[in-house]
Amino acid sequence: MTQLPDALALAAAIKAGSLSAVTVLEATLADIADRNPALNCFTAVTAERARSHAQTIDSAISLGEDPGPLAGVPFAVKNLFDVEGITTVAGAKLNQGNPPAAQDATVVTHLQQAGAVLVGALNMDEYAYGFVTINAHYGTTPNPHDPTRMSGGSSGGSAAAIAAGLVPFTLGSDTNGSIRVPASLCGVYGLKPTYGRLSRAGAFLFSSSLDHVGPLARSLPDLATIYDIMQGPDLIDPACTQRPPELVAPSLAQGIEGLRIAQLGGHFERGMEPLVRDVLAEVLQALSVSEVVEFPETHRARAAAYIITACEGSQLHLDRLRQSPMEFDPATRDRFLAGAMIPSAWYVQAQRLRRWYRDRVREIFQHYDVLIAPTTPCVAPPLDQTTLEIDGETYPLRPHLGFYTQPLSFIGLPVLSIPIHRPGNLPVGIQLIAAPYQEVKLFRVAAWLEGKGMVRR
Image (tube, rainbow, N blue to C red):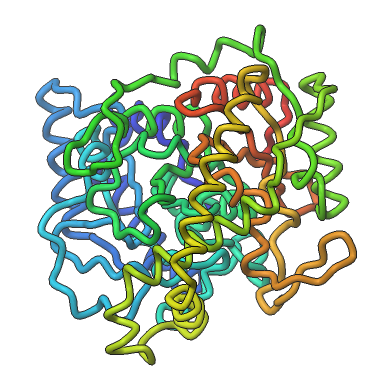
């Protein structure tokens, strides 16, 4: 796998004049053209738009102007983000006939204003309903570490493009783990911020009360900078917080002194492969973590999350299901049809449990700052694997890749998946979890672990 430099190093070289934005872009486009047929990360490449932007950046630098902290850095977005001039397909055949987007998604605009150059849109599970990026319409995105294995999903193209070295960072979305699962399987950083922390305006929603957007990156400083750039209120998205930005990049050197850290047990200790268990123990030992805490009734919270996801997703697509059911990916269609038949009383009860669960977890965060858990129960499974064994019982693979991620999305907690890649093994992801709007604490712990040599990519 080839590797571009990390985003901040690349931007520094472009601003210093040792590289030009146009040169970097042309190399990136050539690499995508050469390698994407096998990787299947990109569903659209925005070459002409990118060339125009790269030329603007080089012109600004030649005039002594600062084009921003991400000057000339190529990036790509999951194909559910609006990109002006191209159709937002969200992994679906049914969306191909929609008109092109009239403007960019808010977070895309923020990144471009910081100098980043958008090079295309990335493959995903249809309508973001999946954990595998095996798409009946746009094909499978395999894992760059081993093309016989899964990249994860639904932001599989977003994680695989970074792991393959095509771009240094991407954007994804996370409803029940769709940033963190592929970040774990592909060995990159993935951040699901607090619900509402980043604007979703211009992102094709799946489940409105669960959807988050966030960045994936190879480098932690890159991830922190990208997240900081995207923060800020947005009146176009009613779910976006009006809180001012709370920057995380300045916290990377602060260390972990004063942070109360514990292992998240119970449900989050069940079912993991031996390698995942070993890596988790290694991280806990490095942090001198001895306490274990448990979220109550997590299995019920996960069941309630299934109900809310299925109900909200099916309602969003109800007209399409009635008019063109055979145009859906069969795996997506069947789950949406099942969701459409869930009694409304179940949805109401699931929301009640959600509030109860949120309040119990809030009490736990009165005593702890960061909790540690695995991201996925296993490393990247083979592409043809359909089941997963958890504590001696066999379960369907696709939904259970989110075994550890879904209960955290359910109540909108900020979570950072960090990559740990032992030589000779596939990557393992570990989740760092905090109370709402406490992303700074996650980045402090991640930076400390990286400084101790624990995070290996």
